[in-house]
Image 1 (cartoon, rainbow, N blue to C red):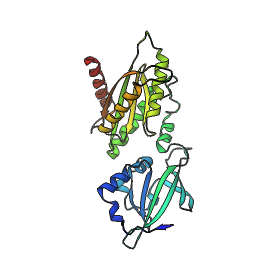
Image 2: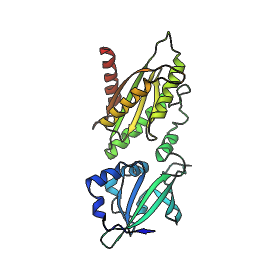
Image 3: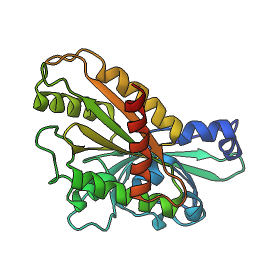
Image 4: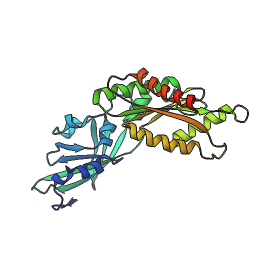
Length: 275
């Protein structure tokens, strides 16, 4: 199906406002020309395919790590993500629209959503052994697993200069009135319900949790902290409100795992000293 939008030529998509809206979409978006050369892809798709944006522009669609397994039928396609991980079979469904570019040419816009699984990142976590490294009490990752995820995300951020933040959470326990295991289990549920699928949560000590937040800057970490503070402080179905301290650290050039964790721990400890 061809939809004419001569009143909105391709050049309009390059405007700051339009680009910001499309780049913020949680759905992966790919724009190619009539020759299937890549004109633009948004942040969600770059993150999904672990593909840097500028380097791929102008290349053929085959340069992306995806393989079309079903031809377009009624504007629908299906792709396999070529993650390079043995046994991985992550699929994407694409909705394809063909538009007039306003200059006598053609635009092809694909909107990608998952057909199964949670994408390349979930496959990566499985490959790292994170799914086997689950803390049995909280239901989130154990310390070894979350640290492997953090190491991998820091390496990726160094390579592509993406934003990355971490968040340390120290849950306060009153041993006279609270069961530690129940408190940990409730904390794990709160975190699992609040995070995006790209985020990772792990328990790194008895009452301390680490969140790894890809594509998240300091402001994004602050917004999440406010949301989690409210959720921890709410009444839970089988548990009273939880008291917790939060401290974030965002990646800086030259950071490694230790630097980021030390910065967050220092902020967490400073909160305790002033409380």
